Image (cartoon, rainbow, N blue to C red; front, side, top):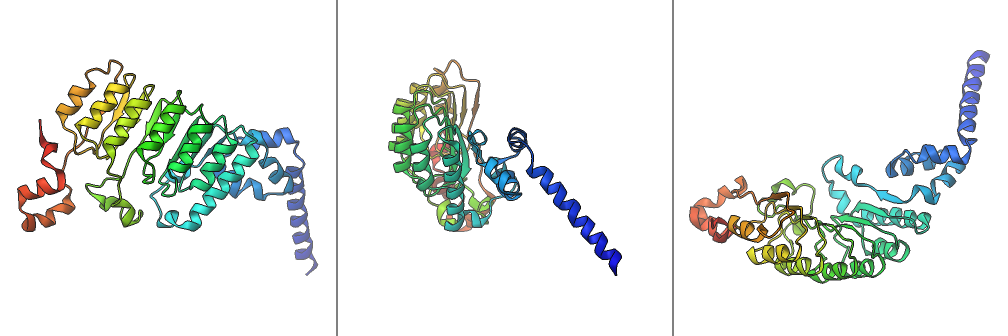
Length: 315
């Protein structure tokens, strides 16, 4: 019975020796290792190794960027991501990263956060250049107003799927952030929401903001330096596109996918003045399969009128 005990003791000793070797790395070497890990890997792995790794993980040099996009993009949305508990976790992680950054944070890419963490970012991150807060129901005009006031170096902003943001917030950001060249303001496919129904709350899918032309007017008036603009499934009309193209003369990329109230003529007439434009993604008009079940009730052409508005089919 003694041999197994000796073997077990030897194995434990070797593990402790290996752990001690990792713990004894110089801070410079340790920071070099940690800098090669993603935010998620540091939080879920490195910070749990030992006290010295935990301490090193809070070094400000590791927190110039807080980027969780790769994690969120790795698979389909999960219903739990829309829960208050998950939002609190994201807020807590972001607030910690902001604190550890000691004012050096320049990139925030996350989702499902709230005003709690974005207000904190506005206070502590004056050098912020990139802010992406997709799918954040509780990010509102209030936190965007503080970002606009305190983060004047902002050059990229993604407010996609954030329903509590209005044209007023966009105007404030445009007025105060002259370096802004990229804006992403995309929404879910309201023409056929079936692709999101298992992951996004139904009431959220149906609550797409309707003041699209007001947002377009704010973009055109206050964001003249934009080069990249995404407006997928925004309920724009020809008037909104005209406002954008009149004010944003430097546009190089314009995504209007799913903007069903905009005609080809609207796009052609408005974009004529954009001399730097390299690519336009035009609306892809189609009748979702899920709507055909209602054709007997409405009649074929009534379905077109009610669901798509006949303005869509103007040449």
